[in-house]
Image 1 (cartoon, rainbow, N blue to C red):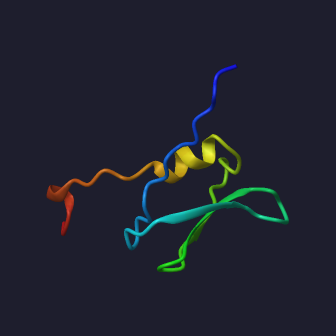
Image 2 (cartoon, helix red, strand yellow):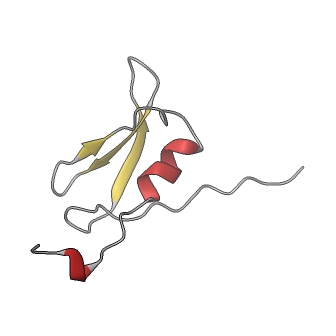
Length: 69
């Protein structure tokens, strides 16, 4: 049997600190929470693993030339 690795979570996109992943008690959906800034997130359409962690780790690409226009 092959061991399944837990995906490494990226830091909070708002403050850069570590986040916790937990299962909400009511709907059993995966949620992410930052203890530093208080951000809490779940993703519609990606409420369960492995899609939840993939959604958390996705980040927008920045294009500095498009800013301030």
